[in-house]
Amino acid sequence: MEKELIISHTEKFVYELLHDDSTGHDWWHICRVTKMAKTIALNENADMFICEMAALLHDVADEKLNISEEEGINKVKEFLLSENIDEVYISAILEIITTMSFKGGGRPRMKTLEGMIVQDADRLDAIGAIGIARTFAYSGARNQLIYHPDIKPEEKLDPEQYRKKQTTAINHFYEKLLTLKDLMNTEMGKEMAESRHQYMEEFLETFFKEWVGDH
Image 1: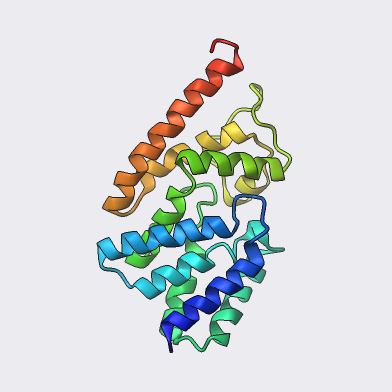
Image 2: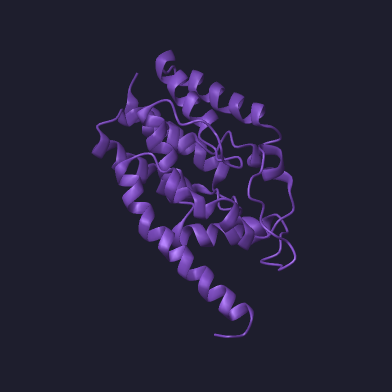
């Protein structure tokens, strides 16, 4: 099993699937998450191959981008098998991909260090300046309003509500993004989340001042 060749094949596979996505889950999101996962993995002395592969493939199985979650998972599994990857690696990669999604919060802690790292990398890309941009891209793609004062954020959503409930871009900050700082797994992830979290709070403060015409 030549890991560098597998990584190269995986990059091409993911690029073909996601390069023209307009919901914020595009190829460049994958690139940023993968780079971040590798940086944290190096710091944590984790298995680099598992982290890189899971980061590259994490959105291929996302139910937001497939007819069903099962279809997406099978797509990833078939690809991994086609690359003749050792079963222990396939199991580890699929474990991460199938358990890392937020889905309204309240999910169990990741079981492996590699899972914690990839989840942190993905969550870091959901907050800060990039996170703000991705939120509005996703909301626009889903025909959601920027904001409406009569549509209140929900404190807790189950996975089905999280995916299907009609909400607004601004509500997404309160329903998910502002909670991520306290859900980070690794020390590096926690440190990096602080400044990105602060940036979002400053953005929201300015947004609401402008909304009422005070700024």
